Image (cartoon, rainbow, N blue to C red; front, side, top):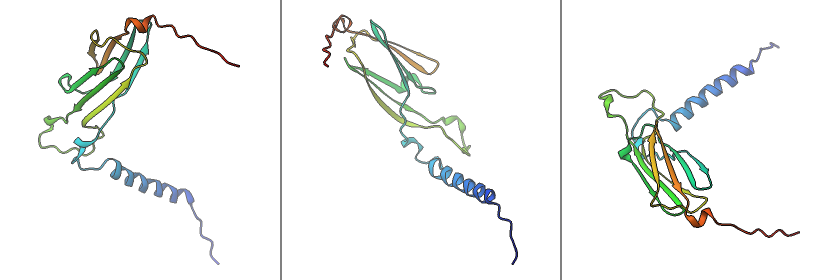
Length: 148
């Protein structure tokens, strides 16, 4: 009987390589067709002070004309579109992990705001919203009943 040395790490490495190639093709196909239908959700950061709610929405690489923000008393709706760069001409991307297409997000606010006095700035790919609280929210005191 002949003994054969078995290297299990070689088989695991080969399997991992094959799985990575399969997942690359499924998750990020080499073809760019249909990428404009991919939906993304922008990240946010929300801070609350005594007088206002400060909301930051991360929208890098998006033109200001492609952003639509609507504010109600208790929500902020952010919609927009990230368009593909048409400057590439006839060049085809070998690989692209950028997401193009429309996006939409509705953020529920922790307090009611005065939506007629909202201030907004767009700096370095981030929209900074200052949402002043309504006077009723600033002075609202809530009594808490504690039970045993």
